[in-house]
Length: 214
Image 1 (tube, helix red, strand yellow):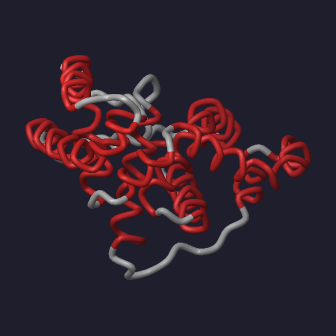
Image 2 (cartoon, one colour):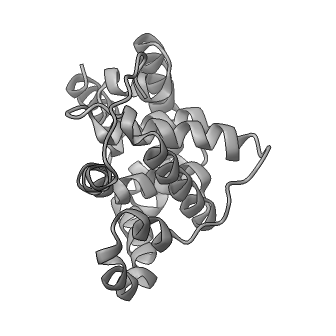
């Protein structure tokens, strides 16, 4: 949420319409982010459900025209830290179709027909996004470093957006991302060489990625 949020009162119909239009298209990347943080399918689903429940509850504070994806990612990141990473509590088990039905009842029946396969499709899209070796190396990173790689190199957030999502200064984002990429590069050197790439190619790719985000 923003630093100085102002609550905009909405009718339930308007709230439901805007929630569906502005936040639901982020479902797949949000699940991918949750899965990369938790490394567990059930926890990822729970985390996404918790995120959408919170987003619906506080939707009247969401500023139209701002980055809905960054807003949801920030909510998910905070939920992960508070409810999962510290393991102090677990969110309630909620059927995601019930959440959809609460604000979009007309689509529940249609969604139910494909609901069983939607999670599998999201998991497959996550696996297809990066190769097994890269995924293994990424998953082995400490979560703070893994997170900046996900946000920048997989999800395409700018440094400014990442700073807002993570609640850290831009300088910390740059430093953490630099260290994360170095850790990842070290882990992937053998794999890169087996694929015909040398250290120079890895360095060039890292420098190119950093330049694109400056």
